[in-house]
Length: 127
Image (cartoon, rainbow, N blue to C red):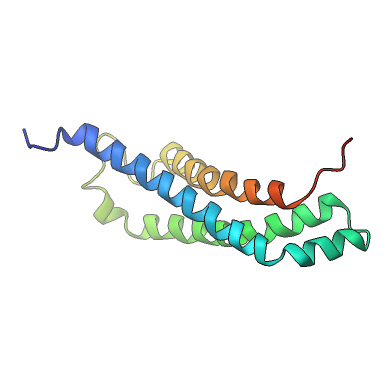
């Protein structure tokens, strides 16, 4: 037994921490980008753009790198499956359920922090 704990505890903990840091970084970067475009957003809304069109524009620009990274990561994992197979226990590196689950977790980790700055930038008109 090592001094840092069992590997079955360490690996999920480090994985969860990396997802949290990735989500925080995504939120910070997109929040900064939205803040830089705050005047543009205000002008678009003053000229009559709907909230939905502004939200969709920002989300599209924020999620484009997420989609590109997800596709690139999937292709990279399929190419590197020979090397990954030594790290996986009980599943194959090309298991469809595992790939779909990993893609879902990564996509949600990037999507949820993307929505937050957009919601903060667009004022609510409800009275």
